[in-house]
Length: 454
Ligand SMILES: NC(=O)c1ccc[n+]([C@@H]2O[C@H](COP(=O)([O-])OP(=O)(O)OC[C@H]3O[C@@H](n4cnc5c(N)ncnc54)[C@H](O)[C@@H]3O)[C@@H](O)[C@H]2O)c1
Image (tube, rainbow, N blue to C red; front, side, top):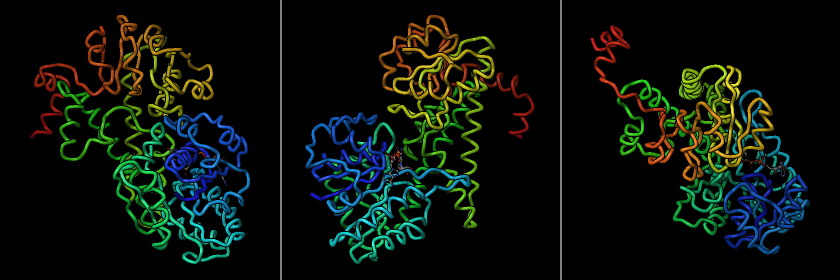
């Protein structure tokens, strides 16, 4: 059991605090927002993350508490996890202003104690940030050198909103970027008590961990963009089913992040891709792949949009089922569904949307430019075309017969099979139409196909 502090009680931070506490560590939290501090202490915090509320409810104040006093949080812990925002800046990089503020506060507090202290940064940063800025600020504020009463690790989380508890307790692996072995050892021991699977602990230099973190996300976007390219091919080519193709490829190259569907969005992937491109370019490396993935994602968004425009006409009502950027979260940041709703409304379609969790967030952004349904069935009943834009588990309980003889476009092929068969008009994006392929090619592509085969 370790005495641990968590700085930053946002979506990721409060979840880490809950998981650390539930695993037996003594956790004291700190946030600049006193409302979050109070919500931890009076157990009124309502988390969007599955599993957090139960974990927090089961912890006494000795195991999990929060304070607005940074000195107290540092005094009563031996290791601190920092999970504060690193917003994108105008140049596409990640601002360190919150991280460095937190480091100055933590360093000042370390200066006031006698025992060693370890600092572990979880926030996503640009590679090089730890060595260039974070460690020097910590050393200066604490009056200590790394390895001499001060430890530092870069310790990113590989998590997805909606599944953050799983990401901390059952990670694929734990990544620790260390400045010296003692710091890495200490942070590894804290994780080992929290993980509930056999996750490997991977230790490397801080800069290598910074690169690994951002490379992980950008590699995932590359796979999504590739699967989406295949979706568009199969959507155009008769008799082809994108899922059979990605399913076969998965035997060789793995199935994760490899489903053709909607463009990717959310608070991490789009910005990580751009930030890495900006850094690689600044270093004189090659960034074409990263830029291409970004462009490809935007092009895919335009492709899906064109399909929906072609299937509808001005004045039609288009329903969107699923507004968040992914299932299990109310977050709509860079959500393609929200963008789609905007574009469709601008093209004269009436739009009605529904999401299991993101209705309030969407209302704040789209206000009365679209209508809001209270259920997926209401969308199906009131729309000329309903678009299934997010593969949420709630869809298995939907009464799809509410669509009547109206069209359902399934971007994820996630409408349950039995319901698909009963729907009068069902279109799976990524499934080409049934046709005699030879004559179809001759008619549709004529000489253009023939010369490609010449
Ligand atoms: N959201 C994700 O899916 C995800 C995934 C992996 C990594 N990350 C990274 O984790 C970091 C945090 O993300 P989040 O979604 O939890 O952010 P968030 O905005 O939900 O929460 C950040 C919290 O930090 C607090 N804070 C700001 N300055 C502080 C300071 N000086 N001291 C203490 N607290 C401070 C804020 O009050 C807020 O409560 C970011 O770098 C993000 O890129 C996020």
